[in-house]
Image 1 (spheres, rainbow, N blue to C red):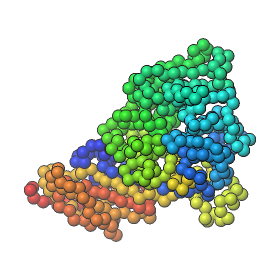
Image 2: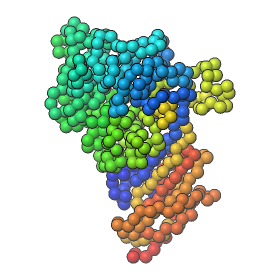
Image 3: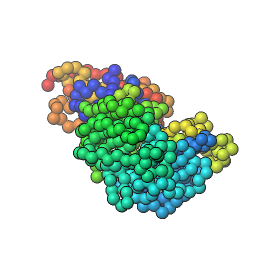
Image 4: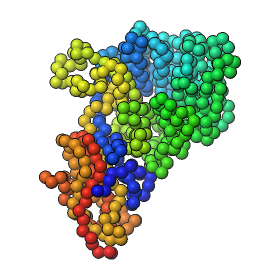
Length: 486
């Protein structure tokens, strides 16, 4: 068998130990499996491009979901988006960012006053008390709400982090008593591009990374530089789960673990390919998220073929299997969400018949508080990755059945599992390294599960196309005959 190994597009096609294309799939330990298409969940839409999505679960267990666009903040009620406030001024290159502090959801967009929502009580957003600065980034660190890249009294402080009083998100005056204070990161690190909260704070700048450890008064937080050269200029690339943080830096993708260990995860694998494909003119449209169920870091971006900056690509990293893949479809953002939940009675608001429900009754989409991989589609609607499997494209490395000789390949059998799948095979071949790569027309499988093909070449490469979904794809078997040496 010629395996569909690890996706390694940065390496040469010949003798590549992996796959040269792995699109619209999720990597597994022994190949790839399908990635579902995004299926609309909300019945109504935002009025403009989505620029943020967040969800929170209150002390009563009830989940509330929110979204923001240029002028409005919305709340999802059943499956309908309702505009709660409509007087904001979010810039095209900015985003709504959300953080939960206890029973309070906090939202910031840099242009307007920081907003709050009391879970289970509020019907509209209101200004967060204590006169916090306008801010681009937000996180909760220990018992503090932390804001980064701030505007104070009309003056921008791009490298400033300011935090609230301890256990009081509406106290912002500097005080040893409340422990509210700020920290400026002066140096060559550039502007703050993200904050990740938790037991300690991680502050990412354009060219450096700091860790904030709580010390109590008088210092409150100590700042320790993790990296003097590595950071990120792409705020939307930052995604975290527990003590694991992922981001895209100037020289590729990184993972930061436990606030200290930096690992280059894309070097000699996908970094060069991504850099070539990514349209940095639309870097503010990048979003990223974590799928904890499938241990995936997923980054959405405008790549080659995009329309007016609309994200059309995903690059996906499985940190357990240390493998990558890609996907290709138009959307506005990706996010991790908590489902709001339904009972059999409230399902009536979705459909009068269970036969016409968008998802099966055992889908995670109906369970309140379950973690789901979500997106906003180009109709400005909430969607989940629960649709029919995207059409997968997988390409083997370039192989030579007999070293130093041409060969005639006349049969290809794809090794895959999945009922209802439609599979076709394409081949390309060349005799010298300078030869062009042009795939043949797609050949369907016969009743024996083989694709009858005809290709005489020194170097061969196979493309597998799978539509209709599948469970596993591992590689191909080929039947060949040796030809002349010339």
